[in-house]
Length: 116
Image 1: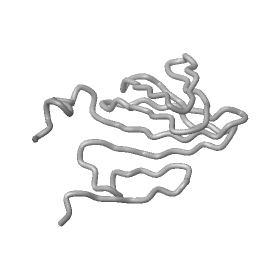
Image 2: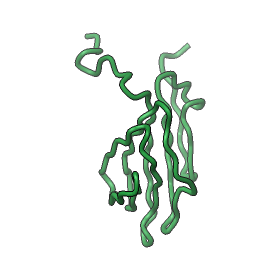
Image 3: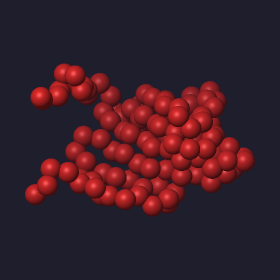
Image 4: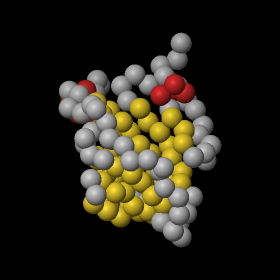
């Protein structure tokens, strides 16, 4: 059995990688919204924070009623309790990755966890 999994993601509205990659510590999704479109619901989480990476395009997030402009290269972390909804700009599609992990679960990171 290999110590890695690989998958190609097609430009669909949403692709969740949990099952496709056999993820055990995070949920990762790749998302594409066409110009003028938005996620059709507001949501929050019980335990998981979300980290969003804007890959291309522009749009906005409305987080707890505050509008946050988003453009390619932006990263944003949203706490579990925050109510959030994402939108593409009227004249631009937006593509982003969402990484969902349990808040306060990181016990180490690259420098602490690496084995050389």
